[in-house]
Length: 69
Image 1 (cartoon, rainbow, N blue to C red):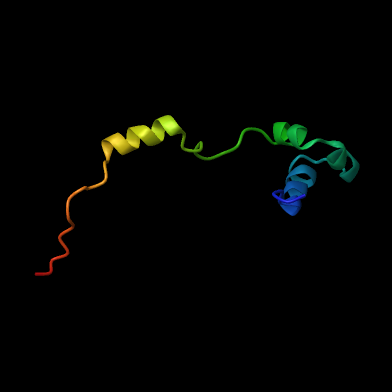
Image 2 (cartoon, rainbow, N blue to C red; image 1 turned 180 degrees about the vertical axis):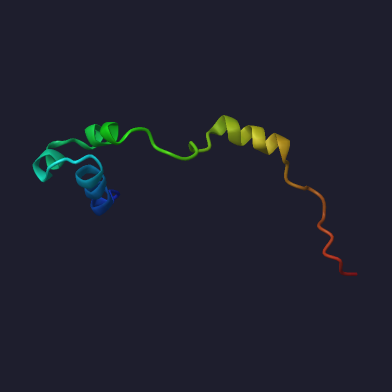
């Protein structure tokens, strides 16, 4: 199945969680995700936050001065 890093998931399940291969393969992806815990790192940027950033840092609408004549 595309999109899954199977070697990394197998290491996390079997080495990290101590699951046997049979236990690992019996899990659904949702169950494995639950056992591994919440994702680490920043949450994806949502539309509301993007709109806030656009208002706070609008694109410069004027001509850029490249230092040339």
